Image (cartoon, rainbow, N blue to C red; front, side, top):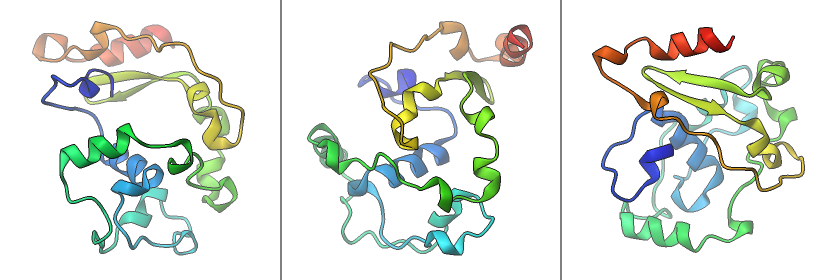
Length: 159
């Protein structure tokens, strides 16, 4: 989320659907009830389990202050570290282990971020150490006409 997580920011960019699915899978206090069971997914993308009618009766009432209080007070056992079992995922999800365990640049429209899978070991059952700070370059967040195409140029230069 980079700069979007700072208190003085009013905007956020990127694929927010992925952020929403990530939060719903790991933070029980913000998720709706009623999701499709894993067995109903077959070879569907994992996020499709949230494509159903939702029930919000036991979730917070969309109040930012409540969400912040809950997130500030969350305990280790209230965060779902391993929201899915690898054996429950479709074959195509686990087939690319070399790909999703690589340090690579993720590109979405005019935004690019480095992906560090070592920062997410715990969700795959490995020992998680406190990782070093991730690099952040202002050029990765440039936008506008004069900066168009720079993520592809950066990608080509690295690979």
